[in-house]
Length: 492
Image 1 (spheres, one colour):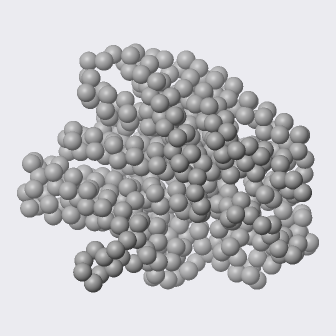
Image 2 (cartoon, helix red, strand yellow; image 1 turned 120 degrees about the vertical axis):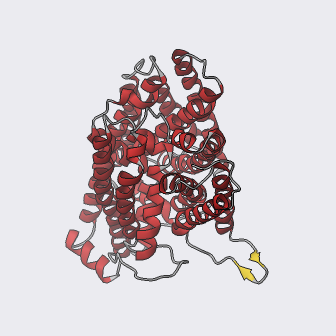
Image 3 (cartoon, helix red, strand yellow; image 1 turned 30 degrees about the vertical axis):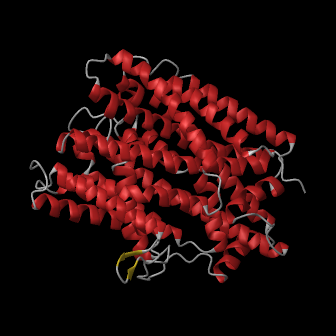
């Protein structure tokens, strides 16, 4: 059977792509007045829209195609990490958000500049640009997996189409277009996911009860693994601790998420948006894992799964082969919705950091109108960069874990810097920079899993879920010690 979509399904995908692009273009011109309008939507977005936008930005194509694959080959252990995500959100509401709303901040890294100085301000902003570009390259490439399976187009063509359409409405409408298209796209992919789960359950002999019973008997629904192993990926302690630190970094220090939180009308609504997004995320990941369990039961009854390059491709293959006409197109559109949502967020956050944390600091005399125009140009430049990085990202491996592990390498050091700035007054700029560099080097060694650190001591193969916790701990301890030893030039 062909792995390409039928004409009716292709029509659904094309209608969606054109429709969401035109919807985003509806906000054309609303980012003209200033960079505050372009990047923060005039701080006038309701909390519920921000919450859904956060979920949409957190849910890339990686999530939709990879999480079912995790359940297919494993169990529901990934939910342990999601529980850590919820804990991390609570910490952010207490520790970071009040500081972000004390001034007229446009990016997360302006807070570091206020606390430490311009050098560390530039360094953290640069770290974000490198991290987000590298991680987003992998995420954009994940689009090629879906589009390639559905339409038979090559990787480069698939990436180019989605990148161009997303750039169009992000360029025109700024953050206002990003958030409201996120809201629409989230409803599309959640609806598509629910329909997919319903379809799978109806294809299984015995229906929903057979799905749950067979999956439970095969231990597919197991959530908790109480192991202290640092090498096992999904454990309770790794999920709670690692997931908490991961979210503190991704939602508390990464401009991709902080920018959304700053569009709220005030601190209370920002907190409400972040906490409610965690509840939606838990529901959403449960849906994705149930799909993986359903695929396991279905293909078990059919005598085996189709031959695919990796478990990431199982769900897209099922959509194209088994979904009814029209529904398959809707689900492919849903997956593309998640990808476009994430890409638009990345483009806007990369552009905002480039303008606010670099250009504006060097050219304080530039007018707001000029910086708003320059912001659009920067959005286009970053679209080109991400397109090229996506092409370079075409390699094997589990794309969800690759994407998260790349980001986790730098998130640890970033979080350590923010913790030094918020938890202690003794940390100095030079001392914190020293801690940041050591933290980055430490996490890079963990990621590469290479060679001895000292004679006779070899780095164990530690799971990526611990990277942020370890990296932030090393950054904090080294930065504090270096500051105490008066390696810094000034006290906070």
